Amino acid sequence: MSKFGALNTLQLTRMVYDLQEQNKKYISEIKLLNEKLKLLESTEERFFKKYLEHNKELIELGVEQGVLREKIYTLENKFKEYKIDNFFGSNSDLEILNIFLEKYALDDFKDYLKKKGVNSVEDILFLTEQDLESDGVPIIQVRKLLQYTKQELEINNI
Image 1: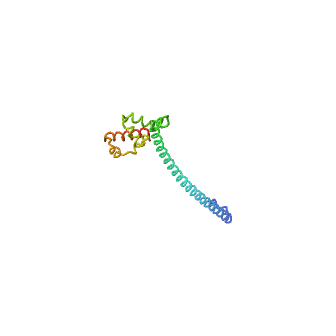
Image 2: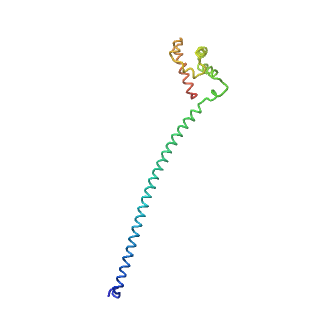
Image 3: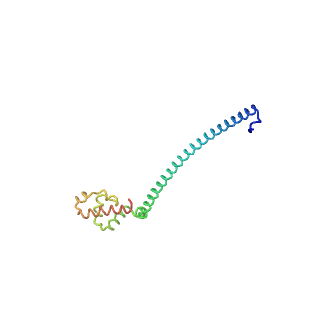
């Protein structure tokens, strides 16, 4: 005799019906879980994409920060060489010009530059080789004056 032998048809029909209902419930729960899994996967995918975007931004910011630090380092090094006393001290532009001319043994130019209206070291750069040569200044002296002027202005970062 089988295990269902003692049950009547009505009881067996009821058991089959209950099992079918339970099966429908499980199928429904599996569908719901699959939908939640898909939602979780898409959420995780969006999160991962955003995570990658933020990481990329952080890397770019890090690179930018490195570039800025290099610029700061370069400026700090230039600032160390900057002779701020020449420009904010008690010396006037004309005094600085005279000190410059003496430093490079170009004192002979004092009166000439004064006649040309040069009042500062920077003003010398407004003179051209042709201006100086046409006034009878020897070419070597012309080139020394212009070269030393450029050199001095670079040293002082002007």
